[in-house]
Length: 270
Image (cartoon, rainbow, N blue to C red; front, side):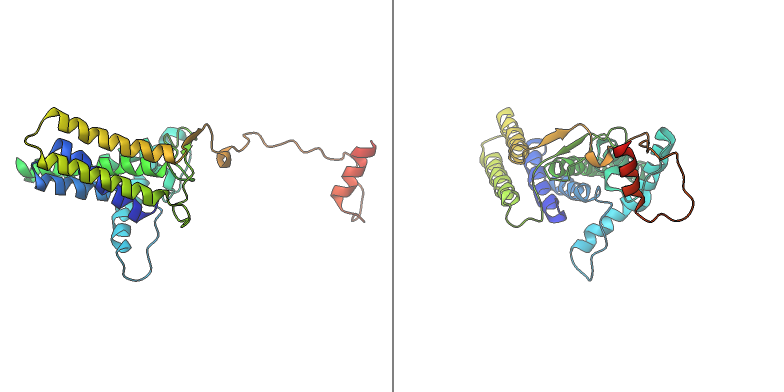
């Protein structure tokens, strides 16, 4: 999906989840939602710089952390494990479970090490909640992308198994993404209204919030006709080069007819 879809759907899902986890803390809700928005953008290391000054430039700036710091480390790590080389701007590096885990670990190292040294108490807790939001955003990014035609390779580079759906994000005739926005927004509104208009916080409210989030994910995956492809056809290259039969007889000079036609005649009549 494109950037604005990722951000909108991620914010709605995060609000639903925060209603179950931290309903009485607007500050923590804001911190988690901010982290989730950044996490929803980080995996798109293949994003190109937009022309001119526009809102999407800020998303591109966020992806620079992944493309300049994280993916070179991923490529070096994978090269030692598999003996293969990878392009640092290959989107499959960060559109996988190992990719987002390593991406989050690098970001956590950059944030938690100085935070644990210079910050304590509430400030350190806010950093941890921010990182939790980042991981949530990256997980939601993968779930949303597996519903598209391009899909994801969840275990890249260790497996080329692909999970993909039928959505084309740029197809204006496909109204399913708009329906996702309406459904997510409706569920978020109902959950927030029930949460903050209820007489008190109970386990039933938590169950309703989690059920609402699960229904959003389930509806999106079911509507996208998601399927598992054991191996990506683009990566199904033969490991052994095909054997080409050559005519053992050689003739001096340039041929008067195309070589393919001569060979066809020799093997046909032979």
